[in-house]
Image (cartoon, helix red, strand yellow):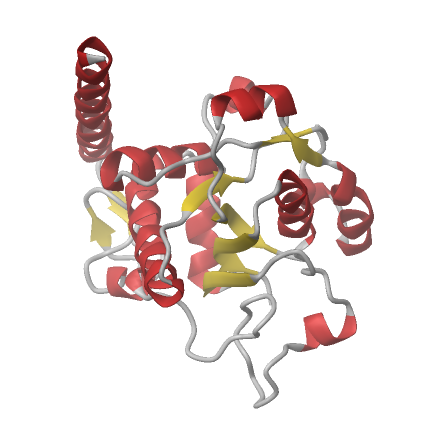
Length: 263
């Protein structure tokens, strides 16, 4: 028992060291390459493509008035947005939260993170995600584990990393958030290549629980409530498919946090 506890402490220290070392190396490489340019105002920056004047805009915790279903910003006094009134996609999700609209320089920011490998943004995205996670936990009164939306098969092998996987790495080793990798993705197709109808029709069968015997052995006691983590909410089909599988596993409450949402 003592050996196991010592091993656990060693692993925590190892990953904490890896966490700070990774951040330090990313910063040094960025500085060595000449720094970055702010995607909002074009000023020269050092580590990330946001200057100190524009960074507070990224630190905000989302919109003031949101749809009670999907979390989109409301433009009317009705509590449900037009997307959810006309084509409701989120039926298994208890509440969805998004931090920013996917438009203008914020769209460029996500593009830089995902496709240009600006990984110095990872700890900043993890920080605002964690702040929103804490606010939800305070509101509902229970701690929340995070379930990452899994990447398409072969993505990590092709690109060397996945943004949500790295986001969860920082959440786990920077803020001690419990991460539960309960899901796997079956489809190899990139969602950005699908239109709205194809997303809605095809994604429902693209996600499933990992081997249930393995899950029961690895996680004998599952939390009653979890948060799905993803980068962008477009139609809501991905979050809905994942939430449906988690509730089939026996999880009672499923929330979601996405960094951006498409209007």
